[in-house]
Length: 300
Image 1 (cartoon, one colour):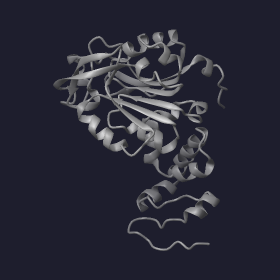
Image 2: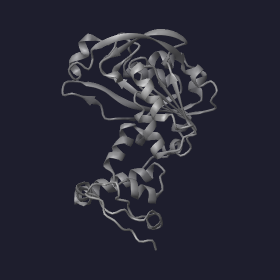
Image 3: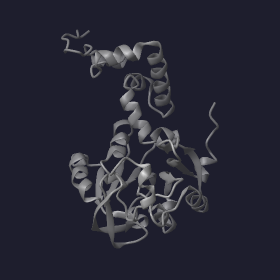
Image 4: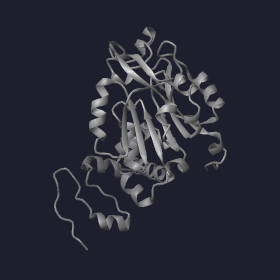
């Protein structure tokens, strides 16, 4: 047996990885002492158990689940990406996935950290984000960065840049929704011409799209209503849906839900809605093709 030696200041000694793999013991090497103490308290143990069970439910083997469940931050990343809401049969056999409205690439990173997609297409047109996105995933041969706006068709369009890049959109933001967000984050600071690409064109060379993550700030209706072949080979869509209009001419949850039903998708999961104490603003919806949805077994 290899002996583990050495203690870093503020960190728990690292367990030998080969022994940990055999025994299923946890690797605490990246955890600060205060976080470990918190984690092993009764409430922490309960939270750890929930995280471990959730990882195993998603198809991750119990040894890996035991190790990664110790980190609440890593689990939060999974939940923020809404990957915990995707059916396990889809996650267990990922082929091509699309990250539309990739922004900083956090969704793509969460996907790569825990699962093994054959290919990821990350689509982003916000000039402030494209360069950093390319730098972040330049060393990943399975990730392709597409500098364009996913839209109803091909061409060019004026893109509204908001102070907070995540809110930038092909659509003009509504002035009356400004008060629902942090001060100055909803300000339009400029416009820029960007290339548009349709979903059918984007995935034309792919045999299957396992997951389409769609976070394109109000432009979802144009993309989905104008897609035929692309949606036919898509298994699952994670999409931001709004209950309060954010942009001029955007579509809310009722309209998008009706469209998804007409395209052969059923609502599988809906995240907790986001609000700032006044009204519900948005949530994330997970839609799955009806043929897959009908084949899933009830849980519990």
